[in-house]
Image 1 (cartoon, rainbow, N blue to C red):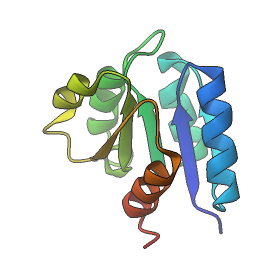
Image 2 (tube, one colour):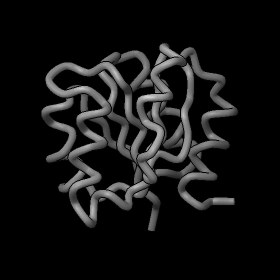
Image 3 (cartoon, rainbow, N blue to C red):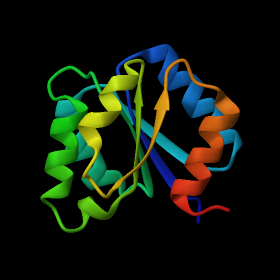
Image 4 (tube, helix red, strand yellow):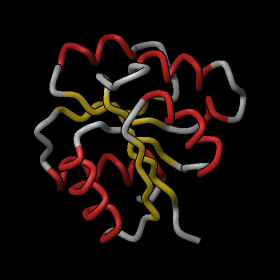
Length: 122
């Protein structure tokens, strides 16, 4: 069974690029583009990993992490934060499910390595 990755990102071009790269790596990939849909999508899709943007319409990445952290099942899903604002990495310290941070623009090879490490594919 393929491992599942959920991309929560509001920039369509980034979503398309990440989906293409991760599907080539053999992952089942879905996406959503707003914080409001994110929690429902996580519950429906049951991802093995979440790629989470910080700035999203409706609910930001920190708020989503807090919601996940309050739920026993959702709080155990590993998360990689993606952001153009490197300093936003500090906002996610102390959340054990946040496994890594990936600055935009991505070096795709590095992102794939981080995904594989967070999902346990090494």
